[in-house]
Length: 104
Image 1: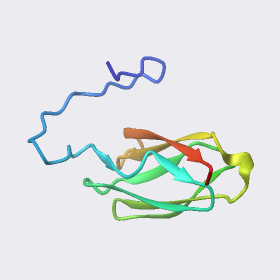
Image 2: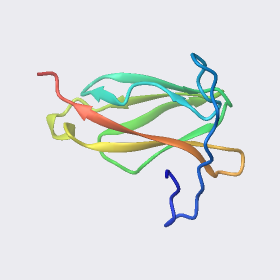
Image 3: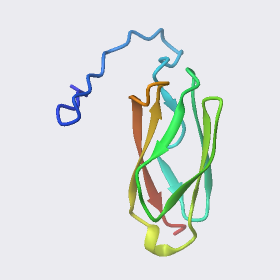
Image 4: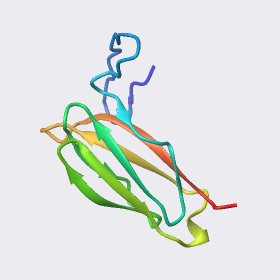
């Protein structure tokens, strides 16, 4: 179960037609290289939030899309940061964990 009992959040299962992402799906890579920028999208057009961290920053947050940028320092390698899609009430709809990778 994906339910988060600590935060009292229930994640309902969604039936998805083959080849079509769920309306709750976050589309984007789960890894980012140091110095790189990645784009994420969410079909429902929600806003975005990143965990506090010193590796990745949110550089665009509009119309269900966001871009995150990773700093270029090797100290960021291995860090994991949660990216969350929030509905109009600031409730978490979905989240993914982004892992910072090195270039080599």
